[in-house]
Length: 394
Ligand SMILES: Cc1ncc(COP(=O)(O)O)c(C=O)c1O
Image (cartoon, rainbow, N blue to C red; front, side):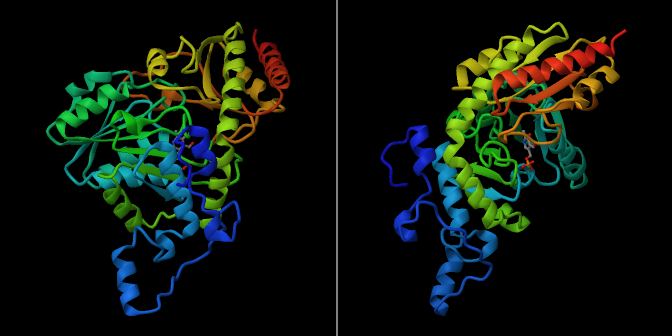
């Protein structure tokens, strides 16, 4: 990192770049490599000993991977970062890095669905017990720690329902009890929340979202402290979940504009959330920057902004065919998994199918991603949607 400033926008622009190493090219090139040749046995042995610090084999990363990892580590304030094939791979590898048969792990009830599935299915098959906690539990988590508890997993805000967690309260308890903590920080990364500064051992980001930012590549990244790095690096190497060099290039390219994109997603998201809050069909807007969101005060305390993803809760008397009619005709809001690209999305969420600690008893949840389209056009699309919805009401 050559820049002396560590302000977020400067880091986003300069971290991980070394034009002098690449004939003056602004961006590091894409290196495709599996085999890396060594000139002597001594050089081979030295490389093997130093395999996490130099290019030794494609699975451990090429210079493109290292450039991406260096940039993310600098931006997130970590010691080192580790690139993964996707965000889910990063979540699973970090859990596996800390858990073994007989251990217990705590996860928030609002955790990303596939991570819940991994904990209840895969981890359980290998003798790890997972239990879930109210994401708003804060320091109360101490009561749930068992003799076998080894790790506390966090995700803030929570998937689909956006509960903001009290990260410092939880990390303080984890540290006092000798437990590891890992957090999925995808919603706010790479700008609005820095969990490592609040005592988390590993930060996980699905780079597929705002870092790649263009809905065309998948990647994940785990950002580690000096202490957590060897453990997570070892597991990532064992699992072989490395990121492809082309995807590292796209993620690094996305990172350079992530600051301006995120601020625009923030503005669009807030405007849409406030407009939706006035609609008679909407009971509640679950957007961390709005007071109606559980944990809003914690968002104010710990975050420096909000991204473009949030949910609305519809009136419980609105039937599914009416919601389907609204969604089927959307022109600008696409329907599909993932988020964080330049385009707007809408997706029915189903917290009632997953939640076990606090069963979801409210109306249907629609998750929206505010893209970069003209705000008036987006509102008009939603307005037409509500008109279609109304036509299906008695
Ligand atoms: C909060 C969160 N974490 C992790 C993931 C998984 O990331 P990926 O799709 O890159 O595997 C997602 C994907 O939607 C997500 O929303």
